[in-house]
Image (cartoon, rainbow, N blue to C red; front, side, top):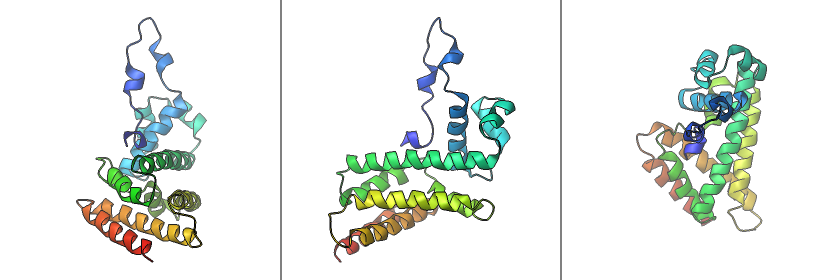
Length: 202
């Protein structure tokens, strides 16, 4: 799960004698986006100022604003970046746990128990910014639609497949929120498991 939160700095910090260390750094835009992704997810979008992103990504203000003319541009980029990272992780986790509907709970358990789990970045950002930046609602909606499609792929072909995927996606979102505010994800996972079993038995 670490790849959802930060790029492993060891990739860039290995000693490389007789080479310019600057050449081993990721491009400035990537460093900005990686830093913003971690800070926005862990601390919230409102609580994270541009100056902190600039300082922690190691770029100048001029470089930052060349790539992201405003904080809103960075927020949109963060959400698109998070979307791809999370979906890649979700598909891989489901495959690791069997690639069927029984994989859903173990995959969520893996995520919920990560020490840097802070819920759904899209739900959180909509809660923070829906009124000020309505575009985040559309981005979140597209993310959730893709999540539903991945869940649908776990299900056998039948007439109610899409409706069942919609219900399961709602269960997943409910578990995500519950696991965010409970001291342990156990109750969220147990409730989600009971609901999934009930939906499967319809």
